[in-house]
Image (cartoon, rainbow, N blue to C red; front, side, top):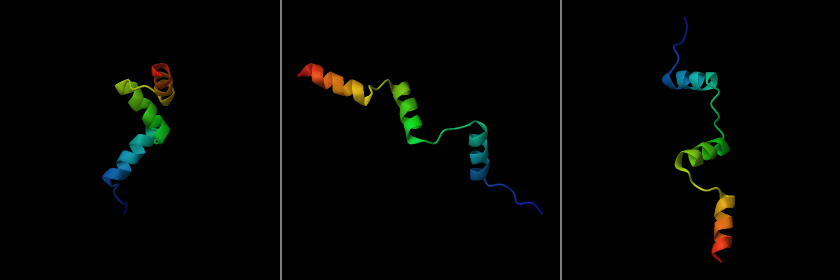
Amino acid sequence: MTKEKTQIDKFRDTARELEADESEAAFDAKLRKLVGAPTKEQEAEATKEKK
């Protein structure tokens, strides 16, 4: 008798197949790309220019 996979197991399998990256750095990089937010380095340069 085989055990049916739960929804979370199916989700995890699909994410692995798609080679999803779960790291926080990868998430932050993609989020910045979507919203166009400046990086920490860009913010530091902007702060220096204002002074």
